[in-house]
Amino acid sequence: MKYPNVSKGIKKIYAAEIISIFATITAIGAGIMSAVIYVGEQKNGSLDGLEIEALAATILIAAAAVLYVVGFILNLVGIIKASKDEASFKNAFMFTILGIVASVLSVVLASIDVAASFTDIFIDLAGLFVTIFVIQGIVRISESLHREDMVKKGRKILTATVIGYCIGTGLSLFSSVFTTTGITGSIAAILSVCASLFTLVVYLIYLSYLGRTRVMLDK
Image 1 (cartoon, one colour):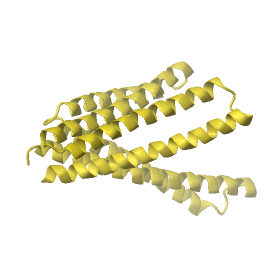
Image 2 (cartoon, one colour):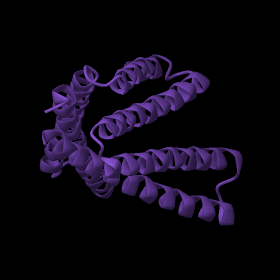
Image 3 (cartoon, rainbow, N blue to C red):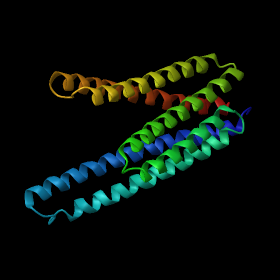
């Protein structure tokens, strides 16, 4: 095995992404349960008879939080491990730290709208650059292993990831500048759904790429 640290690191990053998916599903479940509780409270005027739903929502929220934390830590450990063999992962680590700092500032400055908006943008950018440098690291490793198929795929995913981010940012600006009612609102909603689907497809391809990288590095 030529790159043992990258191999171990990518496995952890891949596992972290899977855990994050479960965390998101759990969070969605918590949201559904919260909606059920809200509807029930509005209908009955109280939370009587909704104890089981409330307990389920609490458990799901706690489970989602734990899964997100575990996934984040595992991803961080994977990036640190991989950085011992490839410099691109060091950049990914740097932006991960910057993302953490921005997240803390976002909480501290939550009452200041302009500052909170800037920190949210920076958090998104930091996440984007983490993904970019992880893919770049894999591409460079693939080049040294003469895996042209993985190099080409990685570059395509890199381009699609940046395009997805630009589309999402553009739609956010569109919604903030123009009135999102009537035909404009309908157009914005349709474009938003399309952008979300595009981002989801790119993410799934990226996840598959991480899986293929694990196999490549095990050989």
